[in-house]
Amino acid sequence: MKGLRIYLPFTVNEIKRQMSYKGAFYLFILISTFGSFVSYFLWSAIYGSSPQAVLGGLSRSEMTVYIFMVYVTSAIVNISISDWVSEDVVKGTVAMQLIKPMDYRLSLIARATGVMAYQFVLPSVFIWIGLEVYKYFVLGLGFTALANIGLYLLSSLMSFLIFVLFDFCVGMIAFFTNYIFGLLMVKEALLSFLTGQLIPLSFFPAAVQRIFDFLPFSSMIYTPVMIYLGKYRGGELAWVLLRQLIWVLLLYGLGSLIWRRVTKRLVVLGG
Image (cartoon, rainbow, N blue to C red; front, side):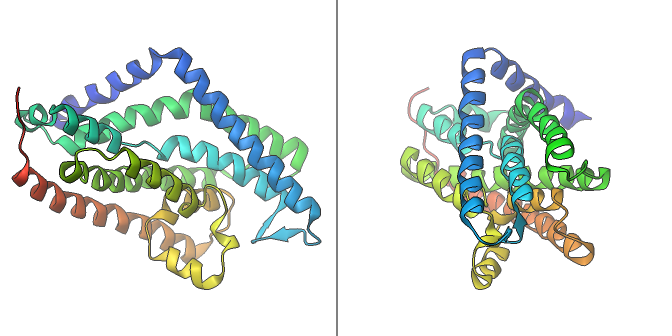
């Protein structure tokens, strides 16, 4: 309860901050949904020109669900805290964070939770509902089972933790280089590819997929979406969820090691 009293205000304040910029909010929805529909028409053309009804283990209807669930999952998962770390380092405000009786990383995660909650409730949940209606009445796939929805939400929560803990480690580079804007652009481009956001990982050769299994990136977006589609069953489902939990623990430990090292070499001028 004490930790909740300390970090909950970070979550609430971030939700308020997001709500105060309505223009940015509507622009975010426009750009995100536009990108999703571009992907939809692109994949429709690919399936329309292919002699095979199933590509990469996904039918045309399943690919439609995949595209829009990637959008919903990205709103939950892709919260970049490395931008905040870089800004704190450049402005020197990280020094104030260090003297406060709280964990800097947990405060960042609390802020990211606020952004995630806002983005999920205010554009994504309505798109999710619309997708379910479209699945039932147009695609004829039926509504998604409640068990799949519950497992999807659990997996998405761990995906969120994997992403922010990984992004925290990336943000620590700012303590060594001070400015990581270019690196963050490269990170976004690579993650959109490695997480299955652009192309489902099942389209890659089996050898490449096995490599992805040893990396945390497939657990960020691809795994929860495939759980939602019901592509994992039994032992395989248990394994992908366990793998996500392992990555949460490993990235948390790695972030702790890096944080202890960077705080020993931190020098702040002025104040």
